[in-house]
Length: 217
Image 1: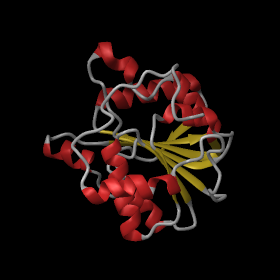
Image 2 (image 1 turned 180 degrees about the vertical axis):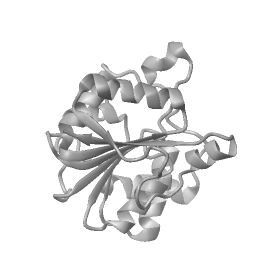
Image 3 (image 1 turned 60 degrees about the horizontal axis):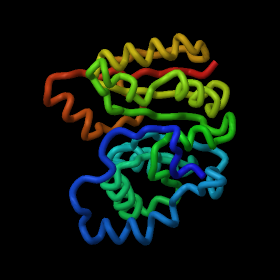
Image 4 (image 1 turned 90 degrees about the vertical axis):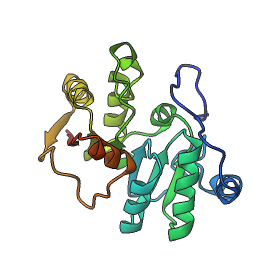
């Protein structure tokens, strides 16, 4: 099963405000149709696949899914309210190429077969800025190893953050792994980019963003 794993300590909120009635109905009715199968994460997923880890409110994932109907998307997000927002976007745009893992992404990464994704996004993950909390960050030697394993040869790991320390942290872990080459200009947003709510918040607070393009080698 990939829905829970006692080896992983999850930090952060699972749920915020009470869901609106329609969002609650989507969680009950639509989510079971889109939920990743626990014993076969790629069941019902096409040959071309992109993964977004921690999709927040789902605006970026839904935008990319609409632009690329030929690609199957899996989104991983444990925050109930974010999952409900993505479901509403899927319903509104009638997206037929989205699957959802509504739990911690780390057990999902472990369960996935090798070389199954063309692209993996990790956008504005929780920075856990206090040094005593750095170990809670999603980027770790273990997750970088799994991201490398599940990416296809020449696939892309796309990491964006407005926290310079987390960008440096990610570069250091990637360099230690040795299986990626950074390319492109990190101050330039990705192709077909849509500003997320987290990026908008960073800009309001005077912070710029870095967009790392890490090619699997």
